[in-house]
Length: 412
Image 1 (cartoon, rainbow, N blue to C red):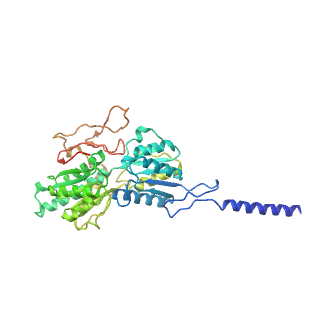
Image 2: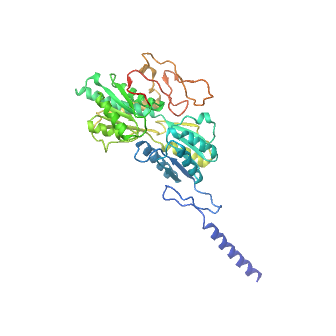
């Protein structure tokens, strides 16, 4: 009897254990938002990442982030949640706090104006990692769980500028324009260093192959305003610009170019389907390498760089396929040569021998790379004959107006 009683008790114990272990675990909708689940306090919850985007898939800028987020999370096999159309205000903090409360171990935001609200959330949730793209304050805030990231996209814009310069040369050789008419236009969002660095590197790339090129720049005062961007591109075209590029996020400028029959260099992705007769190439940051790096570090409890800068070598700076219908022959080969030189360090985008400021060669520049009001003193960034962009913090700080570029308005 005693032996039989023990057997019965063991059987009952096994039933109880099976009942407890069968009720745990969260659920996923295939990689998107998760319901959080309930693991009964026993099983470890699956790792989850959160993403905050200024706009949605209709913005080429945000679509680029969304695609990178999905690629990284699906490659790592983790759950994720993406919040779109989150303004650069308290709504960003609210979204970050909600993502932290929902179990996200790491949270990313994609727009410059999100930074202060991400810092606010980082202070409130010290056990969650917060990563902010395009921001500038991580290295002065001193928070162990707050990080900035960017990429050397100025190299991508420089390469795209070479494509533009070769197109101008083709237009000159075919008699469509004279060398003096090789004027490009650029639609920028704001006068931030990020935009200045971008349009300057694009211009320098073009001038490296087309020495007579000049460029006019107009600003919209918004990252995403299709009407303003279309009007800006049209104004530039009417002002004699024969090729257009942009640092703004809608299809406004590319569609204006397609309507006018003016060659266009886009940003953040190919516009060839909508603009088959004018699109040449586009540069973009591929965020998947950074997301994979930061998420893996967070999962393993490892430190994440305070400032991380992706490069051509890390696969973070890429060009789309060249539209051979519009680009002249030899464009691909020229890009491959220049890219190899940039990687090898034998060519530098901001080589001070290739531009002047107010007629003078730049031999020194003390850049404000620290955003802490209590910090006094700037940083020398002209070393070994070139401006060292994105080396002393990840976000760009090249904010000089070089000769050959004309600003049509600076209200933003």
